[in-house]
Image (cartoon, rainbow, N blue to C red; front, side):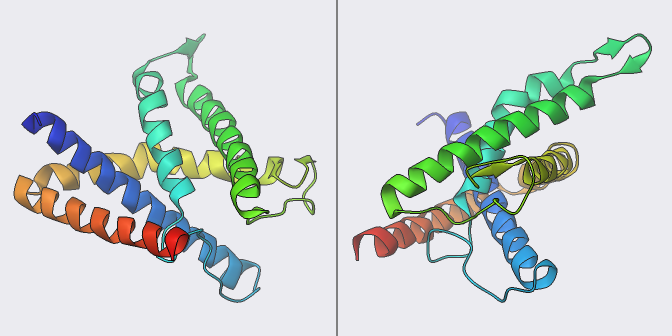
Length: 181
């Protein structure tokens, strides 16, 4: 495998895992601290990761990177961040809707219920969480991702490969444990 491709794969896999873990922490924080429901594993796997967050992060990185770099104006007002926010809301809402159907098909149900929120569709998606994902996506794209890119760029390649491979092995073991045993 080309060294540059291997490096990019390792970096993006690391981003996937970081955002999956951050998503799990966010979900547990909401459940324990905000809603005071008590702890439960908020992912579909055994480990502390919500793969929908990692998947969503990669989709946002790949689909919005070019838009994010644009300098679009409406008169003298820069509207690029507004367009990025709207795109994040749309993409994450569609991803959450698709995930709910996939989970229902594979597990018989999905892990959330938004029927208590106004402007919801079958309890699968709702305006309130979509806006939160938009805000979180802006923090992720404009603050966290540039920071993570700087940090991974400073990692020696051997360390990057070792960390990514270790996380991949743990993740694959979790998949096998969760779905095959």
